[in-house]
Length: 128
Image (tube, rainbow, N blue to C red; front, side):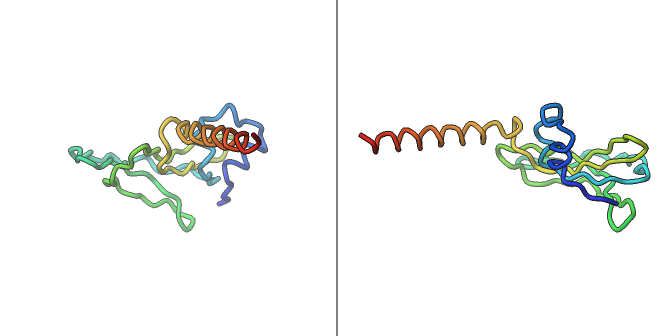
């Protein structure tokens, strides 16, 4: 098993613009064998203030381990992105899941730009 930060992989391959914005924040694990078939789970009735996290095959200590579905508290401004497996070049890659800002972090980017503009305006006012 080899862990590669996806951000390094994206930079090395020059694919930053071709991948979804959320993928840059995740780790990827390169594996030699396919994961087992997904298990079918019953999705319980939705609960107010909670998000259903579906079960998935994780890779721990050189073996696949099933992680059962469960509820987690909802996080305002975030969405849950489940882990996924992709096959390429005779190998399997597991992309870790997790909580990501809605809209690919667009709100944070806008907030950062606004703060920079406010900083410039404040600094320009000091020169008068």
